[in-house]
Image (cartoon, rainbow, N blue to C red):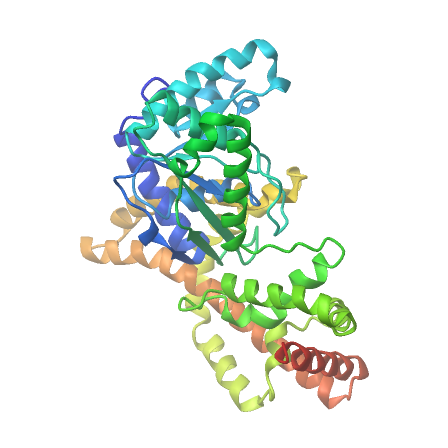
Length: 442
């Protein structure tokens, strides 16, 4: 698969996508929530426009939540090596040249543009990240005109017969780089380029600005958007304090709960700034003190930390320790070795992408090896297959075992604080309850 036939179906790519998709949706993330798939018509000529906060993981969020083989546009400087470029073309990624890449290289965009038309005609879908670069903050930034220019010019080049549509995509991660988090992807209602035809024929630049503003407006509706720079940290933390327990909720995903909370805070800042300031202050105080005392928010939510309940958990940990040990032994390389490589990656915004890529490569390398070893050392064959299947399943159990041990140790720590009448803990608990009362009045 090269750039010449990047718009064509690739069996090799399909196999890789299936493998990477399985690892992404079932192991790297504990849950992938998809909303708005009914907004997508497979017969339409679509350009997807996702927000860009988490490097490669943003593109994969779109790729692994729909069928087909969409083509992505990326900055041209990553294509400098012929070897790397060949890999990127196989992965269905096309370069876009900017002035900083050299004026002579801008001519190459003509070929790229013609190829995007082929991609759109094939109905595979074209994915363009309209913010350009990525920044790890939950805020929609100023969009670039490139996506609007490509949409209009592609439609114009085909005599305005394709009626290209841009689909806004909202992506939210409960954490950018940790494994076993929740990913939420929201597909908004498509924006039809035909709505702006008259404006484009009169003044192309004005039409592009109108389309860009409309796209920005629609993207902001389906993502977590914290406008305030001054109170960003406080509001971002408040989402976890108030809505963290709803991370796995499918009926009303946390992304939408966060949007409701942020919108109410924005109105509160105008109507009652004193209360707004109190909420932000409590949020920061609780964040810092909870970290200092190693107390997570779910422990603060609980009214009681009964020793009987924790004793049951301790018994489960004791009885299933061999299962945990088995899971850790064979899955350690997938979850821990990727962490060792992060020391060489200074930009933490790429940590999630590095973790996923390396864990996937290790899985592709070692899982077949585990299968071969199972057949060599275990019989009969059906039992060998069961042993092989138990490896990833016990790996997941080992992770949940670790989380349970953390909750129990945290509960015991809280009981110790209460027993010793720790003033810092009671102040933390009091601030938490005051914050929840203020928020509940919103």
